[in-house]
Length: 59
Image (cartoon, rainbow, N blue to C red):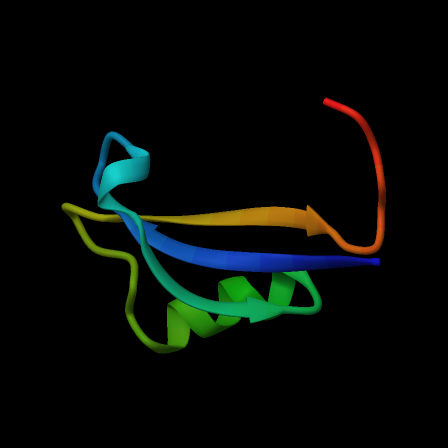
């Protein structure tokens, strides 16, 4: 099972500039939310990160 985390960030997509905006059950819903709330602009980008739940593994 996966969830998708939505972040708004700067043009360079650095981790330090990420602002969390929500968790969604599909990538399309996350992108639609970003478009509806105008998170895209000339000086910011949107990053959608997929996270797998309930999975154990060694690093």
